[in-house]
Length: 611
Image (cartoon, rainbow, N blue to C red):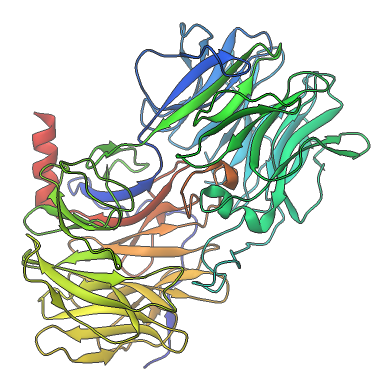
């Protein structure tokens, strides 16, 4: 094999290389997040709740103004996430920001004239911005770049300071508790609390490095800040993959003296002083064990699956959201670049030449009967005629790929993540109706993530064991296997031109996108950004590659997410040679496993949906 050639990644987001206006690009995107979100206002203990809006939308991360007359919140009702305000009775809604970046976590100044919020505008990183509501003038007060993030700002009662959490000045950390990627895949989040003046001066760290501290709020007298705290290594499990313990802590802003308000098990988040001695917070657990509001004085609210509570300054009301999860197959989603038509999809979508979609969904797809967890399913582009065609209790059907003629689906079956070192997985294929099941590989090595060659004669796939890694090519007709690579490689994807295979390779600090010729020569590295680049997919003409990247870092505090392994993942597009890298999504949810829809199918679907 020849030495690797590195093609420099252009991290300044060059837009000039975008596809021409006539070539609308339709891409299916697995966005791991809710399909809708509703805001509720209730008594401080969670009783007597009512919807803030009569019509269900996509609203979240709300908080009260100091005088209790307004609620500011984030909404995706007009595509991108922007800041709005509304009266507490749901009247007088007003949009405060209008930007294609991600805008979130708003906090009104005590006099109600300014709003501090998180925004990715400009650099793509999450910074704290301040908007003057009357003049609409904006200023960036944190000015970080790259993967560093700033989250959850809150004004001091006198309006002289803003406290926030941030992972600035920390090294990228990986999850070492899971051995399936040797601590190199899932990011952990090390965040401390900082205070800063509204003009950007006086930045000072409040909490030490080495732990996670988040969602700070001021005491009524402005002398203390309350927050939640947990070990950095637990910020992955806190997203919904375990039950780590966190504690509610306050710190004296002047002296640094700490006070722990809680103890014992349970993930406790989103704290707020209600009086000088009483703190409300949220106990976060999974969908089947709701949790709900709790208080340091011992009371508990109703058993409700709610998120991001914020109390009014007088402690009488609370506002929070409830997420809704339902199938959004092929519904449009916001794209930063208007030349891209992004559509919601399930996990690992693949589109056939005949317009059918195959999925291996983690969750349940709405169908009749319902489709089971991690089974192989086929449906129309819009989610209609959904049918489960393969499911076995002994393993998961994962990462399907259509044959070029649309007759067969190749997929991996077995174990692919936590237990892949001890359990085998094989390549299989079935017809589109589920008949003709055929084993393609056998043995103890873990095989998966197939990709067909354009002529339908070969399949590239990855193998994994403690002793053997890399990509292989299977001859479908005679079953012979050739070795393509021997590094820590995964997610192969054959170019429509047949001349190259894109894949993800683990480096010293992150995963990056590479390509290689089918004979194993001319390996080229296309990306070299901080964070992981993975899940590449080719455009139908082979000129562009879409992929998922974590180079811009977290959009919000990691423990606040639910069931999102990589909530920092955004979609990027680049030319086939690695040039012209540019983001096409910008929100707080995880974007992964994209699939490009053939142009003719995308045009047909857009025409039908506009009728």
